[in-house]
Amino acid sequence: MNATTCPPTEPLVLDLYRRHFDELRHFLGRRLDCPEAGRDAAQEIFLRLLINPPAVDIRNPRAFLLRSARNFLIDLGRAAQSRPQLVVVDETDPGLVDPLADPARIVMARQQLRLLATGIEALPAKCREVFFLHRFDTLTQGEIAGRLGISAKMVEKHLANAMLHLRRLWAKHSA
Image 1 (cartoon, rainbow, N blue to C red):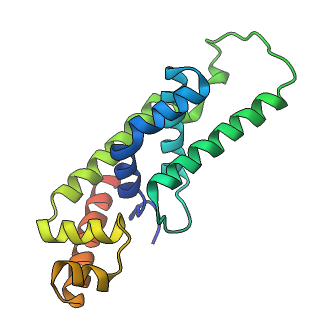
Image 2: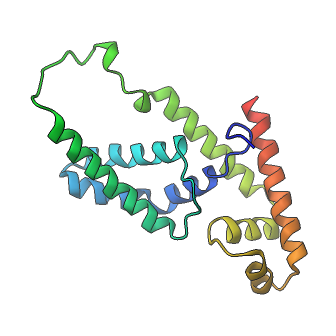
């Protein structure tokens, strides 16, 4: 399985973005004493999550996101300390372009998030519910079966259908 054909973390990042972007933006804006810097920092964190997804399952997505923000602030502080002096530069120099702030890259990432959100929304209601409980609430298949009053085999079938649907959608639009 490679990240081009099956992005397992994009739905998580989309959910994190929907649920916590404003909170993260305000948190970072207060810490950086600048609302615009807070927005930029929050976008940077989400782009980093898309580019370099976490290697382990996230049990508490909100706490994970806030920890990522704190780590980002620590990185900013370290970077500021390692700069010996400020140098005035020509802002129009093409060599100064930040590849993560590339508008085309941001547009593409947003399109990918919309595609996955649309794919998830297109799932049948029960399938979508099982998918959300498993991927976002990190419930086991047995816990989902108990909560929804269905068999574990049916939970497995719903998860397989959801993943197959999203993989096909991703492969279709990535080609």
